[in-house]
Image 1 (cartoon, rainbow, N blue to C red):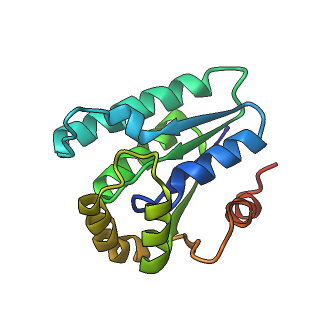
Image 2: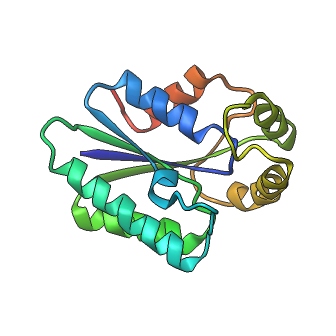
Image 3: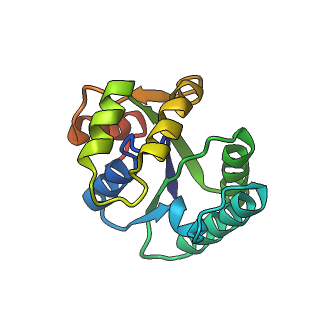
Length: 166
């Protein structure tokens, strides 16, 4: 079973792309890491991130045992190397094939997308500033894909072609 991991800053389009891939590929499970750490008010410390990693790996393991599931798409903002490595190591221990991409975009495009997304409760000026500041970190990661000038379909095609999906 293949696991596609989509990482990147808030507002870059991880959820949109992940859902698009899942919808185009029958028998695909979609996991949004935010579901696994939905605390009110939000607390993003080592303890809560560790809990979310455990929750994500539990879901991945359960989907891997389901005969109706043939692929998993996991989207989550992993801006700590230890979080990303914990996810990768955990999925490897389950015995699944991993393909990972980090989505990035220009500051201008991030702001534009942010302003267009009126449905998400996280789209505040405070979180936009945090996301902009995180761009430089995500740009240093391996296997990045700049989505600034790409449509959802083009990003999905690039990911699908890179990872031999479909």
